[in-house]
Length: 398
Ligand SMILES: C[S@@+](CC[C@H](N)C(=O)[O-])C[C@H]1O[C@@H](n2cnc3c(N)ncnc32)[C@H](O)[C@@H]1O
Image (cartoon, rainbow, N blue to C red; front, side, top):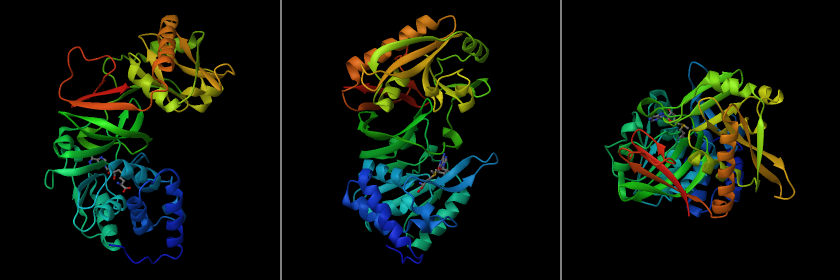
């Protein structure tokens, strides 16, 4: 399957890429061999060799009319992590959702001559380029399909692995039904603005996670497009929510920001920030996320914690969000809350209580478990559940 490498220097860069990936992404020899075998630059026509082999860089493929990327070749680091999560074995039948060709070629290396790889993309131009690159690099046996993957690719199912390489907002029935009994779905699932690549195995009628990691992908198009709301409070400040139970009143929340800030400290260390963010996102009632631009942070309207987006608790006219300060007593940083508006006291108290509960009951208990339960949510739905069109997501800590 290995193609002849014709670009001077590409083999050296590829060897260096594999060496780098072995540091914290690749853990198995078969994945290392696949990365060593597939000429990545052949799937990045027109890109610099250096860019094609930079492990944390994506390579642009297509943009929409507003200049937003709708298709990229994913960063090698993320591809390696997700392939390790997937545990692809020789002879497997694998569906990749979102095409470029390179990842499909890696998977073809992993399944070998007895295995089958199908890659599907909604965009005919992307599939055309992937097809050309796959053929050119010697991976003619990979099947390419043009379709909205919301409906899966039933022709070819059931799959031992479905690897989704686009940010999904939900898990459509076709993905679950398209898996074998012992099948595994790897999906970058977005919950309130943050995407995590989650490996999910069957668990009764639903799915349960075996691993997850933070990730970034272009958003899903077509039927499965994210149903998120976002309101601008003022230039450089926005609040988003994906929870239908959260009401976002832009005018009232903007007024709240004009009122004096209330600051409350938790007395607990601010550490494991990604896990804390997940805990807050899942457990805050009226879940939302506050975003602020550098300008606004510079004017001291909103704290720097909102630069990348921060879990927020909102009511009809008040808002609270997480902050931190240096504190030698807690070690490093201490977590706290900033709140504005008529209900600032109440919201800050609720938020601090969650920060303290996290520190007391969950922080050191290891990774979380995601579950996906297809079908209508129970009534009333559990407060901490993430409600989606086709089912609900729950997250628990042991
Ligand atoms: C990050 S790129 C894929 C990267 C690729 N797997 C690689 O090897 O690097 C995501 C792709 O998902 C595609 N996509 C978006 N929505 C889709 C949908 N509903 N069905 C199928 N493909 C979709 C986009 O057109 C885009 O090409």
